[in-house]
Image 1 (cartoon, rainbow, N blue to C red):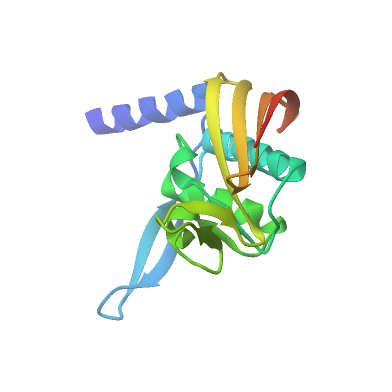
Image 2: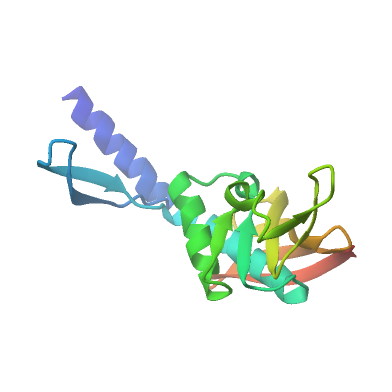
Length: 180
């Protein structure tokens, strides 16, 4: 009885806070080839809101200046507050810029994507762009966030935006622009 009361209290807290987490079941085969039903947690509405912020800001920075769109590399460590599934969703939502979107750590050493100096330090991209974000301030419906669109040591932009969430989308106001 106590477990049921605890579960009901938790569900009510989620409903009251406006945070919804959906779950669904998927049928998969285990190592023995037998079918198993697994419960998969969906992305919460709050996490999706943050995903949309990151994607909106990275797309805006890319539009400002970029090194090409044959690939995008995303610095995943900058996607604060996202689950692995949320980070994957960011990559998926950037595929309208390029079909080839990767976590930066997976492609940083590929000589078909990045140029390196004799010390092994990155100096530029090859028809591609490295994207990242940094939240300076964040509240429910407002954020100050800096994006980076990097394509070389002498080729990068660092726009800082004031983001406001209205009517289900993030609206950006450019506050400042750093250029390299």
